[in-house]
Image 1 (cartoon, one colour):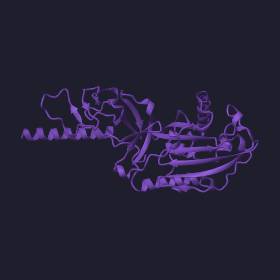
Image 2 (spheres, rainbow, N blue to C red):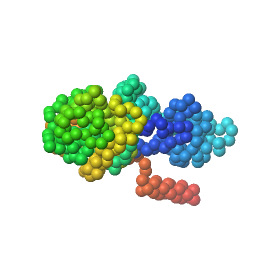
Image 3 (cartoon, rainbow, N blue to C red):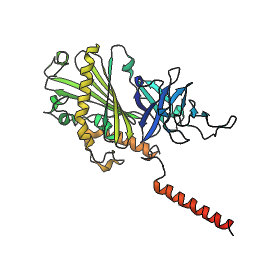
Image 4 (cartoon, one colour):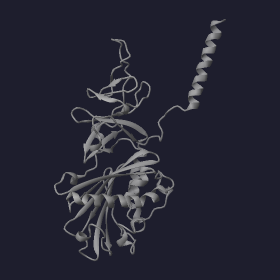
Length: 365
């Protein structure tokens, strides 16, 4: 997992004033809206006895622990312990970790890291979301593998004629070779544009719009934004029609990824076409799913030399180089939090028992 980035973690529409538990980055967060509609994010673990705050409730824009009623305000400070006698001070350590939040493009974005605000990498751009003439639909899919494999799959073009030979790749199965392409590298992103000539006509709902030519050069721009966002832009040669697939690959844990995506289109923008757009996006991902989940190892290797590469892999190579850069500057984290094991607890108990025995011996001499 990589620190110091904004993570798209949930759709804005899913958040209310009722606490919602969010599992991400091998951690548990709790999110809720205050009386002004602003989203707040805290660690979902009361420091008193470790209870989940997402089972509690919002009171005066604060969150109340369901176990002993401890009350925490937006900055994580505990302001009330009901069991305490009046006037008894609240321990300074009775506080929760809090996390910066932004709402953009229909997503809740959570910043996980310790960089000052001015030094944080920006949220990836999606200007079409707020542009007149674009229609958005949403969806999600869970994968039983590491997010790095899922993201790489979404920016890989050479698998399309094989995994998607009965869907989006049906028109290029006869010519699976990939033209040489340039990778445009940004500060924390990279993109590439590839053109493919499809010989077969589009089937299904879009056929009346897109089947104007027997051979249609389709331009596809694939992009990634560190560490979990991919964007696919399909540029059709008819009427400046475009489809954009903006995907957040949410790292639940080392073996689970939750993809939440937005499909934007600038043609047939009436609601009756939403179902087909959503169905096509989901079908494509479901075709990928069994193959991506079968990859070993589940995590993209840290070193380039650990797997073979060819010219068509240049965009994913750029992703791996960015990831290695993050690891080299110390932005990587351990897979599991530093929680004592049963053996550690047992050892500590035995040590305490020995200390008690020694004290008893001294008192009796």
